[in-house]
Image 1 (cartoon, one colour):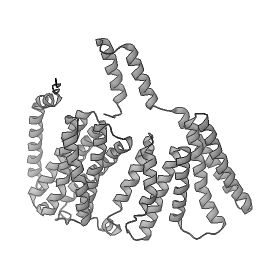
Image 2 (cartoon, helix red, strand yellow):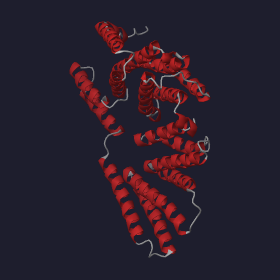
Image 3 (spheres, one colour):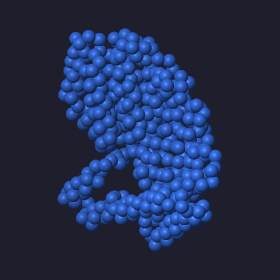
Image 4 (cartoon, helix red, strand yellow):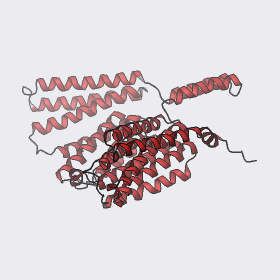
Length: 428
């Protein structure tokens, strides 16, 4: 599993394996060197990137301080000189093998280009169209990211693409902006080939924001149950993609789907719990067309994770949690939310989902799942204490029954975990 504690765990295992004679000391040292080369904290590259950002800020401040006194040609020349200088330095550093320095210089040049687009528009009094300017910045940043293999330029491109699509979305009163994919697909292809986590998260977040914009502005104003159901199914889809990539050793880009999907899952489930316990908000929901679209994507993906996952201790509890999450909107659509039974059903589902996430995180060594499950459980309990299920006596009985069930599960957890941990017999 690709977890934050993987290196510490591997180092402890290597020490134990060397002591038991399973691995030689030379092999353990080779594994540690290989792991160090794959990633780590690259301080020179990070400092170089910050230095490039400061230089770009210095140039911008100098130009702004003397902007009114400069002739137009001087202004344009400064912008072109900054672009040429930054990209020339990036190309030279790349040829010398300093990839971190080259990335910092290319990012600095991309930021100068971004400022230059705005300044040129101001100088020549071009028509105000900031989404169009964002698209121009995205194209320039994509060219820099492709030619100079700059991760910083790619992040700038992804931000500019989101700004362009968001601007067109607002201008069209929430109409779907399919042109987003014309610029996003090349950026996604570049992000797929990179090993930078910031690039991966930026690409996943850009895609998530576009999918989140599909319901339109009217749905966000109404904030109805169809919108919540769509967000829940979308979150399940992203968690499934990230979990499948972790389990099967898939691309790093897909693993970045997991944390964003978990954030959406936790927020949506807690909102559902708050609304069903509120006397004014607890009313039957109505499905919208996007719900069927999202469920048509989430259910097959979840089925594939449950059937094709390798690590049972990780995949099966997570699949259960995601399946139960998809059942929450069904309770709203059935109309039972107005009854006490519906409130108990939603509260029970959310608590079981939280426990299943914790089990999946513990079984697969994925800390973010354990944290997500624990956070969901804690927030759900606080919500239940804030808004009671029926009377206080009903609330007391609910907590008593839930606590007794958990204690019963804890007593049999050792045998359950031992069953999952039992190794399969090797075929002759």
